[in-house]
Image (cartoon, rainbow over all chains, first blue to last red; front, side, top):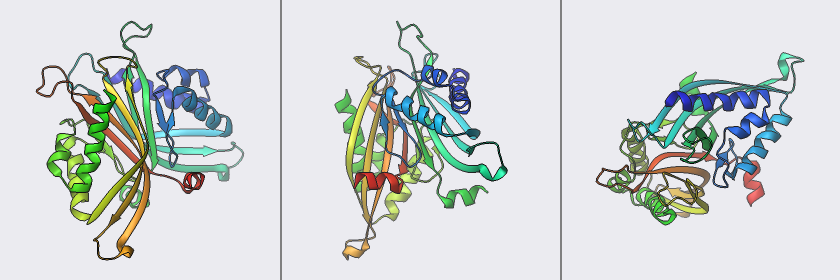
Length: 149
Length: 149
């Protein structure tokens, strides 16, 4: 169960890195209630808005790669064979740039993210599959970076 | 259903403002899988850690008041009489200070928060009640504050 949730989480970052808009769309619950908070930004609501924001990001970044650390996955209810909700927290170590022309073109960044996944309800074509329902990413304050480094 | 989830959300902020540790503890799923990200901080995991962080905050702040705006609540699955998961996003406009001695003692802040609530599973004493499962709050970048103001 947690492996399946982690596979969706991995596919999410692969979609961003590869600029794969279709893969990205397939990973979210298609619902006006999904939500996404980009670092420092206000919440976006609804899959159409969320996917548009990722498409814009993917179109505008020449190169982006995520090195995830401290990945932690749990499901609720604990011990259930049919969990309804999964939380995955991780630290995103982000390398991005406008192109591969020079090392100076790269920038690094660090964020923490909470991803909430739910399972498609019984009766749907993809019943039981984990899908992204909510994501909230935020910058890490210098204080916490110093603790880490 | 959304009213019940909002009541828990309201009680959460009341608990912080009133420094009510017992009320705060009653609002969370008691589970090592709960998570909480304070603005700029790394994720905390497990209700014991999460409650300790709130207790420390409540003990160290002389005065804190939250003015919530843009509160948005949704449940999943959409339209279900027995939803499993609720998301509440809001903007926290925070007034805090060390005491009521002078207006200069106050500080203001702004954050966005995603709260994820789940319902206690069948068989538990509080079956069906909404409880906090995950919270992620983050600072808003200047760019977005300027858009707002």
